[in-house]
Amino acid sequence: MKEFINLKDDEIIRLLRLRHGLNYGTVGKIDEDIISLEEKGYIKQNGGTSYDFTLEGKKLIDEFWSKYSEATKEVVKEYGATFSTYERLVKETGLSWRVIYEILDELRIEIKP
Image (cartoon, rainbow, N blue to C red; front, side, top):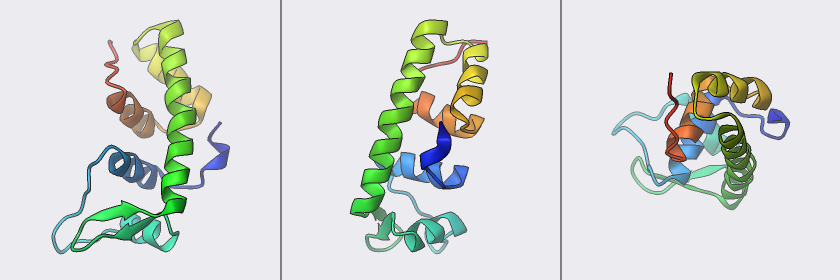
């Protein structure tokens, strides 16, 4: 399922957080993920250490969010918000547990042990 996005986990997580409104950056520190996303044309510096999407980046993350948030909601609805469902999401989507956690967090779905 992960076939259409060719980004590292940390890059996906940064785009998801930016989509959610977390305009991140540490004063004086620009890490390799930010540089990579900027070089790929997905984000642009908005002054200082804040960033915004380019049109291409916005389109990419909206497509990603639409696809994976719906898939996540469907699986949780069918199997419940349990750890085995979390494992199922990782296996079925091909996304890492860190990216799945970020999606669940944004959807405000709490996984029960």
